[in-house]
Image 1: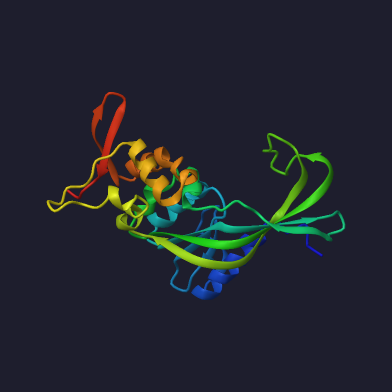
Image 2: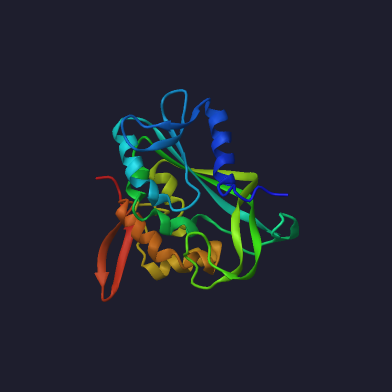
Length: 250
């Protein structure tokens, strides 16, 4: 049986894990603001669990960093996903493994607004690669989800996600951490210390070699984000192509 009213099980589970690890308090009001932080640790710093769009945290994150607090943003990614389908009484109809495998490139679209904050000295993004079960309830007819975002109706509605295990963690704190998302061929300097120059199509080609075509389709967005974060810079424009390289400290 399943509690069909629990739609934030993944968020709640991770919040409890990180509150225990940090000896922190959950659901604490941030000063005189309307915001509630997920966890306030024993040193007065903030941990936020964000299971979807990271940019939804932008205003809150800006305020937290302006106060001098440290901020850790925890973002789970379903590296392995199981699907559990339930009937209207809560009985399991079937459980199967999803062929979909997510990675950090799949989260780039949700970083477009918040990304400049990721290089703040007090900000850390922690990516959790997880095994997750997505729970669904079968419906008698094609149905809309609660947020009414479905373009095509389906014969099930989501019930939430359940954390099975955390397989590994990846932390992004510095410019060097983020640069590692670029293929080595495009960030390795030569003997004279010169960085390679490349176009968006070159980046897509190298990502395809390392991670496959699914990740490579995000190459233009990765470049856009890295330019906004001042990790990459445009060095020249040839025809309709922009040439990029890693931005060095002046």
